[in-house]
Image: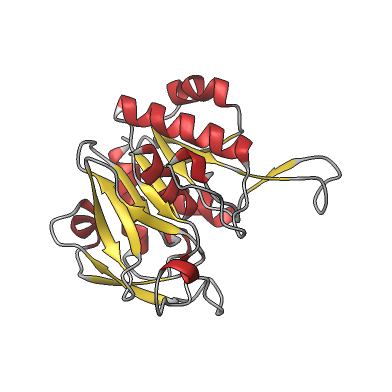
Length: 237
């Protein structure tokens, strides 16, 4: 059997209620299934920022997942938090420590949705706190139709790692976000944009694989989505 690289997957965290009367971790199964299908061995990473380096010692690649929360604007000089901003500081502290540690090691990183935004911040970029208030005539980036269907298309920038991976100029993507990258950090480039100009993907030009996409390729809405997961796992070998 071909060696399966170990992929650390960040978890979401919820307060008591629903699944448990105590705080609990959660993540959709398709994140893990997509990694397995791509040839990786996923393991979940609890939120202990002080153990980020120890976790990184044990894995071959890092996937930073999405969730219904936002990166603290204080981390990117974003000013006062918009009224829609929801924070999960323990999760962000861990993900930022793990992402920065992975980048310092040149370990492959894939950021998905909120994970793309966090990757951008780790690379020195900034975020739009609320798309409807900042982008005139913006698309419905929190799409009303199911996430298993596309919400809009994105244009893929020529010459980027993402373009080489998917081999096409456009993709259909699902859309589940009210924030977006405002500016990629130094040494980073935008690799995908929505028709309204909203940034939908970024990547580092100074790391062998540090890629972020605003959509959710684990749903395989577009035939090219599994190629993103496969390229990430291959980079982790």
